[in-house]
Image 1: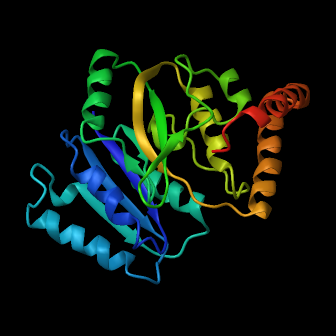
Image 2: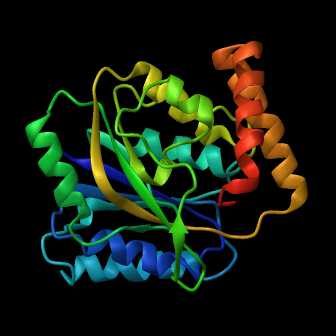
Length: 256
């Protein structure tokens, strides 16, 4: 088993180092690290080059230069860059860990490999997510907790598993729909789960997802996109019913 861990960056100099350290310091090195930079204007590329040189100098035992690849070029936004990462991937599974996010702990890849060795028929592996702020402080779990059995219908409740905590076999990994600017990851997960024949669940945190402020305009756009995605996959009636349930629970739920 080989995992392609894909990190998308743009002007991420301040948060990228912790992401890369969480990858390169894994106890199991059955992965490649792919960085897709959107031609950053700050020191992001210099930071990537620093890590590239450190790997060449064998500062991360067990990790060779062939396991660290990157590009820096203009793109059409986050999801276009994520598609580029999928295209670059040579591993069995793709896993997105974008700048600012972190693999949960240094044994997480080992836990994923252990599960796959027991259930090699799995084409989708997932777990839970803990949220962190920009200072790396834990702020709690996502209010949408990943279920022990993940089905297409599970996603009527929204994005119940964050894309930082789901690994999809490359043979079934869809490309992100660029017509969605805010919530294409929700559409991507629905399509991946729809194609999956066997899901492996790890009842532990797989990632630390960095939350940041979202403007009210983007929040409204995201809600509109989510409604459109749900309507496309589940139909209007199921979408309206799901939103009614979500609205009832919203006042009592965490907002991240």
